[in-house]
Amino acid sequence: MNVAVRLVAGGAGLALELVVLDAAVRTFLLPRVANVRLSRALARVIGGVFDLMTSPRRSYPTRDRILSLYPSIMLLSYQALWLGLSVIAFALGFVALGAPDPARAVALSGSSLFTLGTSHTTGAGQAALGFVEAGVGLTLLALLIAFIPTLYAAFQRREISVSRLSVRAGIPATPWGILEIARSVASYERLDELWREWEQWFIEVGETHTTLTILNFYRSPTPDQTWIGAATAVLDAAALFNAAVDETPSPTAGLCIRSGWLNLRRLADYFHVPYPVAPDRTMPISIARADFDAVLERLTRSGIAIVPDREAAWWDFVGWRVNYDAIVEALLERFTCPRTDWHTASGQPLLRRSNERGR
Image 1 (cartoon, helix red, strand yellow):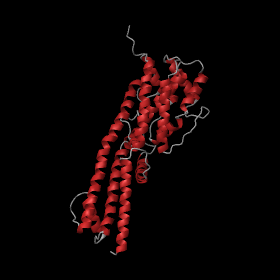
Image 2: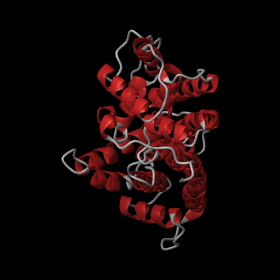
Image 3: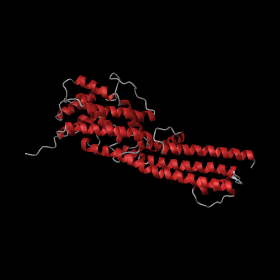
Image 4: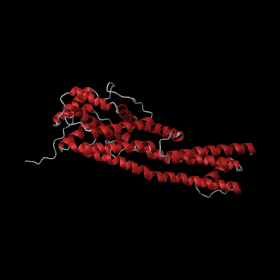
């Protein structure tokens, strides 16, 4: 090969490998939000395949089971893509250093990247390049191995609170369930513990799910209790308590809601979800007034005292909900999570007091 071809091959190989290393570092190591074009392009391709397999015509349990495989396949696809591109990049390098033909260059590259030793280099230049490629291959594999424990530790922390919520809200979690169970054990004052726990939960999710973005696609172990659905139930319960329950409004509940919408905005920004920057209670929300009134009637029947002015309660609730309404509705759709159907609340069985001895 002439010198010009070898120089072009070497430059192209170096540029391609720099793209691969940049994607690997910013995807696995950079502790902040990063727009990695190579990773996003692959995610769109894999996501398109999963979209075809999870048609809305299929039942939710089937779709949930298929989508649970998405993040694991995505991680393996990242690794396969980076290793495959590295083989091509270093093959171009071997061409630049005198490999007689492309087939020989690919054989040298594959043997070096996976440290197989099946092909032998000739000359100091090719030997040095082979050592460099072996180091790159081991580094790419080590990145994935080291990344998985960090990923699953963050996943576990997220899911502990989601699982714990089933004690306070049932499965699936509902905002009226949280209030009814609190009333059933005469523990309104213990709700502040729940608000504080989820205030911290939102902060951690806002941090981990924008730096380790694949975490967003890890589905909760229980299909009916999703992490986005649980978060929405907690926010709605806090909004209902402060707006409609005839008790002193809880500042802790208000801080939980604020923590929720501030940190969910970070996810919305990453996934390009539109939301009102300066929301106010005149904006529409996804919950109908009739459904809100039906929930208040249910709470009344379960023994929870509701404020006399239902109109004021509605507008207070809207004032809270409008801060996160557009975001949670879009994220529920984005991650294929079932919504809490407020319309069916009146038909669900009531939760009675559970801490009274029989007579």
